[in-house]
Length: 101
Image (tube, rainbow, N blue to C red; front, side, top):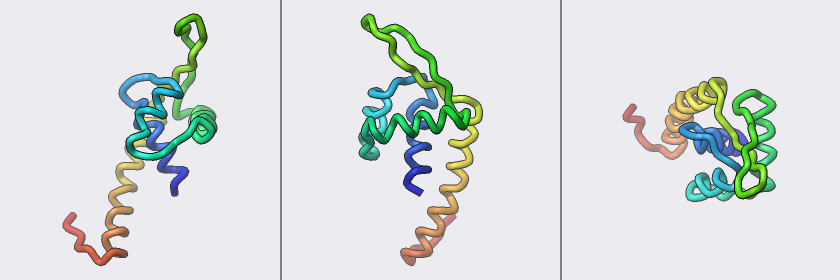
């Protein structure tokens, strides 16, 4: 479950604009602890599953990889939102809370 959450968080970090590794770590950082050694395999998985694309641009004399979300990645975010509603209902049931939805 956590792996899926990490992937969705990475997609959410780039849903509005293309980004690069260090920036993604900073954007996701307030919500969960993620390191470079965790992020880059996630980015490769998302690329291989066609949820994001990668391109390089020069920045301060060096090439920097940028990641861009695809339509498939956007669809994954929407699917996650729908699935999460069910997870919240299950959580409330397990914790003995009322479901007001």
